[in-house]
Image (tube, rainbow, N blue to C red):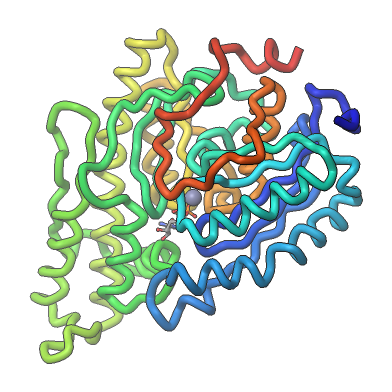
Amino acid sequence: MIEPATTAQNPTVLGIETSCDETAAAVVTGDGEILANLVLSQLDEHRPYGGVVPEIAARSHLDHIDRLVEQAMAEAGLAFADLDGIAVTAGPGLIGGVFVGVMTAKAIALAWDRPFIAVNHLEGHALTARLGSDLTFPYLLLLVSGGHCQLLAVQGVGRYRRLGGTIDDAVGEAFDKTAKLLGLGYPGGPAVEAAAAKGDAAAFDLPRPMLGRPGLDFSFSGLKTAVRHAAEAAGLLDNASGNPSGDPAKKADLAAAFQQAVGDILAERCGKALDLFRERYGKPGPLVVAGGVAANSHLRDRLSGVARAARSELLAPPPALCTDNAAMIAWAGVERLRLGLTDPLDTAARPRWPLEELQGAAATAPRSAEAG
Ligand code: KG4
Ligand code: ZN
């Protein structure tokens, strides 16, 4: 193998992300510098359908990924020979799209004789808070995205302990369905947040499923149903078609009430999780929030209040690194490469890939020890 261009502890990694509806390529260095971070959203292609259409997504990734990688490399001012590794989301996700990214990354790794790193998309979200910060293991993670809602103890790279999770819908899904129901637009999360900012949360009384129950699980399907019933009762759905109609101010109120309920649920569960984390790990946190829903500023405020109350702190990556991007994949690649965790070129793309199945580092090491 050709000698990598820079030292192993400060590798420069190309990251590729194609697991959902963003085609993304980024270049990140071992000291956390983002040399390029390009995200091509497919929003316009999926908007007419009110959700992501897997076949359209895969075709669109295929159409754009080569050019986007080229552009990211040009922006970073690097040639492929300058890279120390190629990292790519190998799952979980929409399999057609994941294939496109994995094949692209493998081709580059093979052609340039560079290590290939198959990154779990959730691990990408989970490690983002360490990008450009001195956050050390272990930490408490609330992972909230379109497909996931989990509380995890992050013990090290590849070492995740699940403390709780949703028993039905993911939070992002609840945001997306609420937006669709109320006709607020697509994508749902930002649309609900924008509407909620103009609404009065006290105007509707919505349930907080699981609140006060033992354990650290979540449930959002009852809340989703309650939003539908409240919308019907308030005349926000057209009786004949079931399509959204009615007063925008009332819709804003319902969006605000929904967001408030989600905030209450996440806050209560995270408060309990911080207690448990302190008990198990002898540390007050920190609480890290990651995934697309972590871009929501109301929820970030709520969670930072919870962390403060528990004499801990909330760490949340900048919103652009919360929603899907390739810098997080490149960074996970950096973390894995430093530990020698690379993958063979026959590694399969996976539609499902729970974090607990990851292979990780043998022991928890503080960041300084890993880097030294
Ligand atoms: O992590 P992500 O970009 O993709 C997945 O891996 O799923 O998360 C996407 C989810 C979507 O459900 C989207 O509606 C939600 O994150 N989201 C938000 C906000 N921005 C994105 N939810 C609430 N408020 C936001 N500002
Ligand atoms: Zn994601």
